[in-house]
Amino acid sequence: MQSELTRTKGDEIMKMIRTALIVCLLVGIGICLSTQAIAEDLVTNYSGEFWARSTLTGDWGGIRNDLTKKGITFDISLTQIGMGIIGGGKDTGWEYGGRGNLTLNVDTQKLGLWPGGFLTVEVEGSFGNDVNFDTGALMPVNSNQFFPMPGSNELDIPALTFTQFFSEYAGVFAGKMDTTSGDANEFAHGKGDKQFFNLALNFNPVAILAAPYSTLGAGVMVLPTKDLNSAIISVMAISSDGEANSFSFDTLFKGNMTYGVNGRVRTDFFGLTGHQFVGAMYSTKNFASLDQNLRFIIENRTIKEKDSSWCFFYNFDQYIYEPKKGSDQGIGVFGRFGASDGNPNPIHYFYSIGIGSKGIVRGRPLDTFGLGYYFIDVRNPKFIGPLETREFLRDEYGVEAYYNIGITTWMKLTPDIQVVRPAQKKKILGQDILTASIKDVDTATVIGIRLQLIF
Image (cartoon, rainbow, N blue to C red):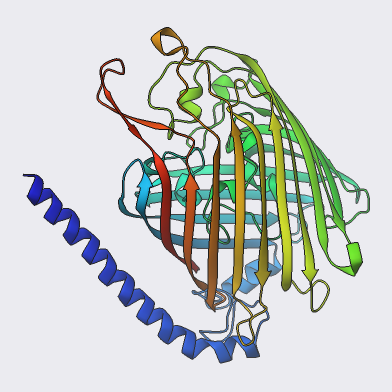
């Protein structure tokens, strides 16, 4: 039986390798055919030649361009990732999965209604599997598969938000919000579909406990200079119980709220573009089920109850080489820092640092690269019962490097490698923790390849 399972698993791995080789061959052909066309036309345009236009499906017979002029845009993408743990972690092996995303944006003024109104609707779905649980790390090595719900293949609406500006300086927003958009960074941001794969290098994890990924809320934004890209300050109140697969109106007024404030400003140090971002959050929630928030790491243990949680977070990005200011090309550095109460939030302190580049390779204006390192000072949650004095977690750190090959503006292929010393120290083999055997969880080496298509 064991040999049959081994052969089956071996056949699956060989099939995946053959598929990857075929994809790489087709991609290589695409690179040769498309490089010249991209160099000649970098202007975003739904129309145009197949290799040069901004999206795979083009202008839909002119309908898409007409809708854009009326303030209606559709951003559609499909991101697929094949990833394997080749050493260390809780288990080795390969998995394949993906996530599709559709975002609808409506500008009420362009639509001929009233000025200052903006509607955003995001539909998201995932399929397949990932290796996030197998590393033993707090941070998912495959962020793309972490959304909209970790470990679930489903179609959800994580965002349905309306924003109304009353002047050039201020506006309000309300609805179901995608909170990942609040920690923007030029070289390290997103959901694992554009830059880094690891969540720790895309988002400040100290905020995950207090701010669910998708939740109901409302807030006020202020633009001190009238320019959204120059400076913005936001104050908000959101539900601490939000989930992507539910609007959670039944829990909205039960006292579990998170209050936050943040600000982002563009800088021009040394005449080069940069950004500074700082924020803080406070949650009134009773965190009696921390294992549900971090279910990909803590294996069904019972946590002591703890009221409220706070966190502080900061990030920066700064170009150190920029051939033309505002061109979105060059080399830069980035970093994040976060701090929390340490209980109930297991992420007490966090920092990351790295370097990124955009379009600096001659003849490859769409290619990007990133190298990053992160560290988490982990505090063990307080268990109840016979596990009260056990410490299952340790400090976690990792390094990641990726190279994003821009085949066209609508097709990108990204090889990636990560080395992560996971927070989980021991793997429990057996159902009863008092009698089960214990196995060390070693540093995990993870490799992956990502293919993103923009429709």
